[in-house]
Image (cartoon, rainbow, N blue to C red; front, side):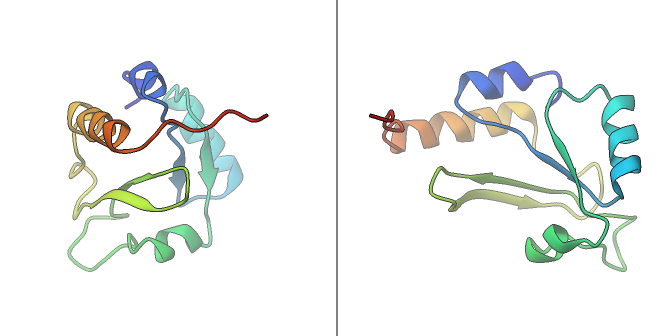
Length: 111
C-alpha cells in the first residue's frame, strides 16, 4: 500500500496504520518502512481488540486487519488475516474503493 498510496488518495481514501507498539517503536517502524501515511501507536491494543485482530494461538504474531470505513463511520470492507502475509493486494483494495465510490454519492462541500 505504501507504493500505491497516491492511487488510494486519488480515489478519496486515506490510509491509517495502527501498530501494536508504543509511540517510539511506532515512529521507528514508520520511518524505517518510509510510510507516507500516518501510523498510530496502540500499545494497549485497544483498536486491535475492538476490530478483532488480536494475536491468536495459531497466528505467528499480530494478525493483520484491513478495513475500509466510509465517511459516516460504517465498515464497508474488512479482511482479518491469520498471518502477517495474509492481506489483500492493493489492486483488490483499489477495486473495492472504485465500487464503493460508484455506490456512494460524493461528499458535500461545506457552505
